[in-house]
Image 1 (cartoon, rainbow, N blue to C red):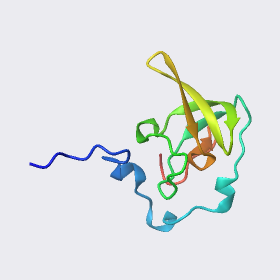
Image 2: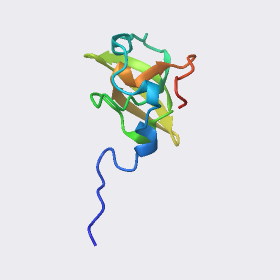
Image 3: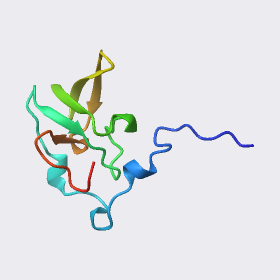
Length: 104
């Protein structure tokens, strides 16, 4: 038997599948979003842009913006009582009060 692949995007077909009308690249304004330090954001992975993408296990996680780092943001959350930090591009983040288009 061949050993199964354990890559970064493995077993994530459902997470990265888009609706028919949402396929392709998103509008430019989604790349240029800004967030204030201390703002609550939700990790929503954009499948068409792999740059600055957090690991798929963090899809749907509510985080707090800690700082800006280049074009990306450092975000922080608690995972089982431990504080963790991720670096994510704004295309993969939405404001916590917004309802994400296309489900999760």
